[in-house]
Image (tube, rainbow, N blue to C red; front, side, top):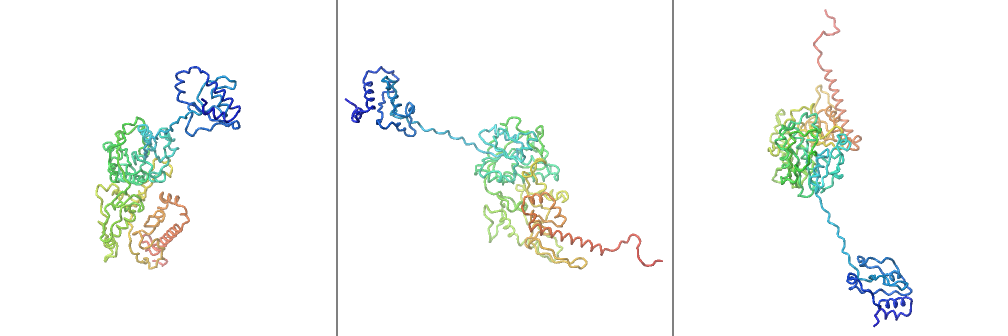
Length: 566
């Protein structure tokens, strides 16, 4: 019985192609040699039926759908001749090795699924200036990606014979980073962990401070860590972030050069809202040779004995502002973020600012709550010589909240020794460190008068009865500084005399802000300040000449009168 394919070929009429197919039928009808069992098993379920090609079209067969591959792979070449060679006969009439045709059922290849990427948590290390401790942690904890931020430059590290780019960190290094301005160097929500490596101990002790065994050194270190935690809040991810403190044990710290200063670092982190949790990092996993830190601006060849017992504490941190006492907030910058008042004053007619309110709004509320008391203290009195009693105006914080309070030692230092307290709040590892990474914290000096609101002073007369020329007012009446006549708009610092303002303008704080403030040299504020200083200096010179003119003659020596004496 002719097959359906033969019937269709006969209906197509005589053609060379049809003759070839008749030869193929004859060859297929002849007895074929027995195939191997493997080949028979492979060919049994397959009944190939090649596609019909007309005599005029000799184009290649259509390609299989995407993702489908023939059992023996794609056809070796294009064109109908190639299909004849694969079909089981040759042009000369000989038999060719039998193989499945291109029309065999395709095999579906499963799609390739990429292996899931292993997520590694990210950690930021601060205080590891020579990058050794971070490299050791990376080897000990390969499932965490550590990034080290150093205040030193590559040239500084090479000068100390340290590798500026260790292979363990794989380039996750930031040089010349100001630790008090982390938001300019890292993106928000970038890290899950923060490692504080001996915070504050790597910097040189200021020359004005002398030694590290003074309470002012503890205040300087506590304030530095407070600003670190305040700056790092936007950089950490969510409420599950962790802070790890690498710090010597208390017994070792007491024998250190700063043991008598009163450093209480774990208590300070709890004051900043960090709660102790189970330790995530173990210092014992670090191999020997990865601990050689900067200590007070130097790298000791041998690890000091008080650093032999190192412990790593872990704390949780949230994104809420840090509550501080009013006595501490009055000395901070009023626009400092992530800071709020602890136990604000509640008024009957006005509630205190809510959570998340800026520190400036909280301070304004406290000033309004004490308005009547301020009037009693600084207002007009029957006897102008009565002393101003301001005791109790600002409550003293309890011992747990006094970690950021300026110690009374500051009042034992003269202005000649320390012109301003900000000179003690300069954090620098070495003299060759780039200026862009030198951190400086600006606070008010408690030795200077408090900013108050008072009526303008009455117009006075000079000792000789000459009316003094009126001076230009620096600021409005309600914004004057009590007892301070000269104001610098750039640094917002007032002084009592013109020579003190000249001394302030020659200091590092004024020069640094003047260099970083474009247009200050030509601003009208600076011109007004210089004019006021020049007027004050001219007035002082006139007063000196007037006092010299009216001073009584000297009684020592002989008189040189013109009269004739006997």
